[in-house]
Image (cartoon, rainbow, N blue to C red; front, side, top):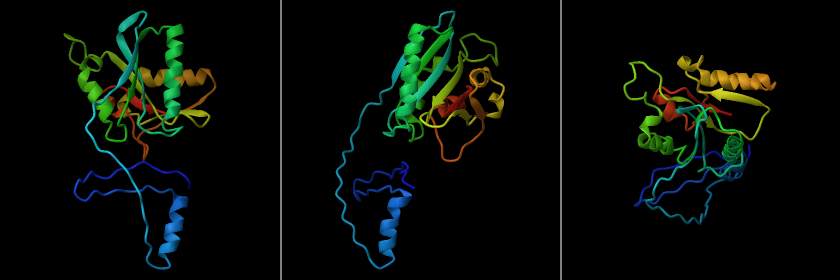
Length: 219
């Protein structure tokens, strides 16, 4: 009842519209007041709209034995919530420290994206700049797998005692990327669940999945 979801309205330089997102609990006050008659509300707001460069921070750890194969653990930073998505940023930082101490077999990328709620524009721009990440290597046979083995889009990692993979496409249900996550949870006695589309959730894994990569959200 006290949660406030994210949203947006189109920018209109003439009407200069604005919107306020309210929690279910906060909505009851104006709703009750409207039941007794007309209500006037005064709002003071100050915003700034400007063009800016899209920035993506990427940490890349070289693979010890398979440097041409890559795996991605991503998170996003534009949302200010502790669970969404500072918790996932904390996972990425902890993973970076661990990989520095124990280098992985394949190359690991830890990108931090922006604009996850706006159709994953940060991840989409990143992939357009780095097509070699998801495309098959030059000269590969038709149907050959891409050098990108999988993507875990970290989302809402700050609560619960289980691990879930969501938006798992049917063609990726038997993928090594999903199997590795399920196996790691099983060895540690952690409940794991994989499912398809989850209503109301989005994630930076989507641009990767649209390109045929075994990519899904991980919570």
